[in-house]
Amino acid sequence: MVVGGISFGAMSKRLYVVAGELSGDAHGAGLLRALKGMVPAVEIHGAGGPKMAEVAGHGLNDWVADAAVMGVVEVLKRYGYFKERFHTMLGELKEFRPDVLLLIDYPGFNLRFAEAVKRECPETRIVYYISPQVWAWNKRRIPKMVRLLDEMLCLLPFEPEIFTKAGLKASFVGHPLVDELSAERLPEGARRENLVGLFPGSREREVARLFPMMVETAKRLHEWRGDLEFEVPAASPELAGQIRGLLEDAGAGDLVKLETGSSHSLMQRACCAVIASGTATLEAAFYGLPYCLVYRLAPVTYAIGRMVVKIKFIGLVNILANRKVVEEMVQDAAEPVAVADCLRGYLESPAKRDALRAELSEVTAMLGGEGAHARAAEAVAKWLKNA
Image (cartoon, rainbow, N blue to C red; front, side, top):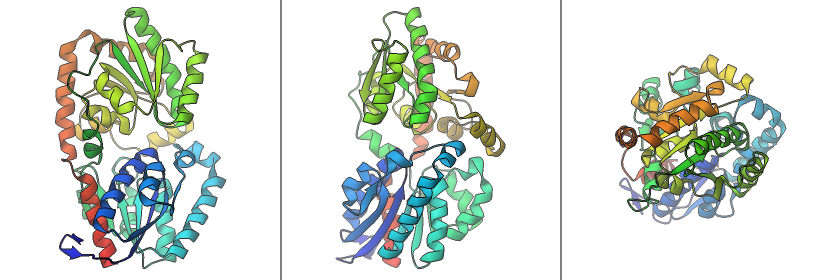
């Protein structure tokens, strides 16, 4: 196999990889699949999710159901678990002695892990895939990243310049969502003008904070227009159980349809939606779904975040555009009356929906074309060869 002019042949190489969230698991699986095509003899160990484990085999542990915790308070509550996993994984890595450590997003854990690996196994090259958003919340981390990492693989077009100016090799590989979402496109005409999507996020605490408000929003909209239908996708069977319980508590089991693992389909069938801040907002933008963004954290976590976040917007679409394209409703502003009013505007006006779709298309074009997985895998393959 030749990658970038480098012949691998049957050369055996070792890769240790760490991802801690469902989105990282999906992106990591695409990268690993492409990498195995380039370097067939690569041996992969590490921790990730079910999709990565399916590609990598028995050497990769599935831990994302326990690892996907968001917020300072939430992480502190599970400090013992993360400490134990950290030391277990470090021990595994020291025994495995990989040529390259590939870290996928998940900066709170992964940057600390990089520091330990740099100290304990200095011969291991460290590549970071999916840049932590330090440009938003902690630029003081950049010198540390320059010291620890060998290369940063960036998904957003403005990120490489930030790192290269600081002295870290960085490359724009494009956003893997373009590949993943293109493969799941539905035929034209799938949208239904009376269907509203409710996307409460992929973490239990997100769902607990946001979904009851979304249900109240659906009730208000249904009172206004009785032919409206509502659907919520659950990222896992566990979340489906949680959502089902919340629907029963709200007496809305017959109002909102629950499906498991169907978010991309719903994004292409719904007329409009309310979406928890995160990757789903970028996915919806790619599919041209008009939506409003909502976001709630524990009060302490939010107060800390306000002190460190240095950007005007929290939604990736608005950050990429550097202007307000979609409505953002944060903390107390994320309440049923305001959200219902926003969605009602889209439901009443096809022209408003079309205008937003045009803006969303313009922004998502900045994510690069298809092939992000392969470009990222090629960068990793080069480090494997040179390690």
